[in-house]
Image (cartoon, rainbow, N blue to C red; front, side, top):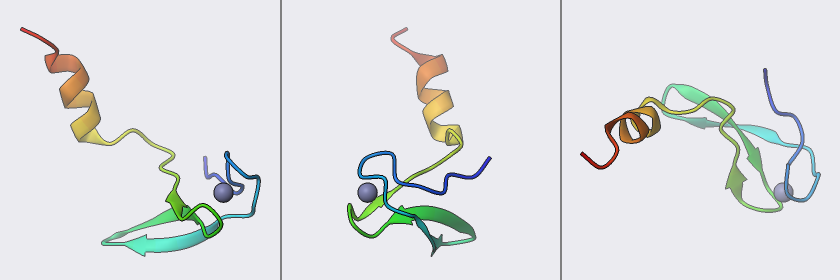
Length: 50
Ligand SMILES: [Zn+2]
């Protein structure tokens, strides 16, 4: 599900291309909003300490 509004300031998000992906971006906050967890984050969580 796409994110259409900034979760910080409530402004409408634009779509900004980043490589092959188009990511919701708030121009007011200069912030990207990823709506799916990235694979690398999952790897870090599952690895954990030891
Ligand atoms: Zn914002």
